[in-house]
Every structure is written in structure tokens, then in C-alpha cells.
Amino acid sequence: MAGLARRAAWLVGLGVAAGLTNGLLGIGGGTVLVPILVFWYGMRQHQAHGTTVVVILVTAVASSLVYLKNRFVQPDLVWKVMTGGAVGAYAGARLMPHLRPQTLRRVYGSFMVLAGLRMLVGG
Picture: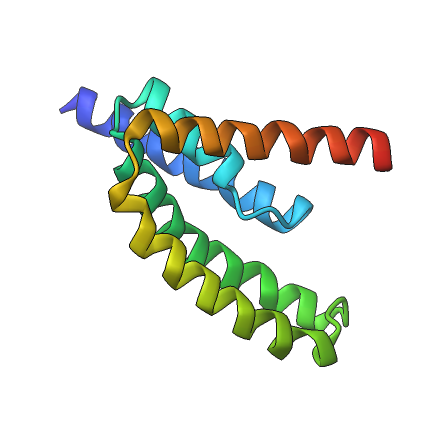
């Protein structure tokens, strides 16, 4: 029983880390969740991505309410970007099952490196 409680506490802590990443940095927590779920939790790459997207839904709603309340949202941009995002998300989710885990890991890792470099150099 102690093992189950420890595992549940670890997962709640992981959720807190993802939520903090989302609320503070606005990056959805995927940067925290995917690597941890794959490398520490032993989850398959595709499952980690799918699980993370569902978790991000909840963290995004929670942080969005605070952002809206504090007027940190550009309403004229939201609907336009959200429409394109929904189309892209659907296409990506349909494409993902056709990618090998190694390919998905490389694409994800490359994106993370490029995003990090962009923030360091362009910031």
C-alpha cells in the first residue's frame, strides 16, 4: 500500500510541475511531462504524448482563467490562432500513430532544442 501511495504522490507532484510550467511559462507542461513519462515512468512514446495532451487540457483551462481575469489575453488573436491550432492538432494526432517511436522522439527533441535556442538567442 505504501508503494501505491508513493506512486500517487509522485504523479500528483508531476502534475504540479506540469501545471506550474503551464501557468508560469505558457508552454503546456509537455516539456516536463513527456520526458519524465518516457524515461522515468517507462511509458511508451506515443502514450506519453497522448497522456500529456489530455493533462495539458486541464492545466490550460486552469491557467487560462487566470490569464483572462488579469487581461493577459489578446481576444482578437485567440479565435484565429485557435482555429488553426485545432486543425493542426487534429492532423498531428492523426499522423502520430504512423510515426515510429524513435522518429517521434527525434522530432520532439529537435523541436525542444530549436525552441530553447530561439529563446536563448532571440530573447
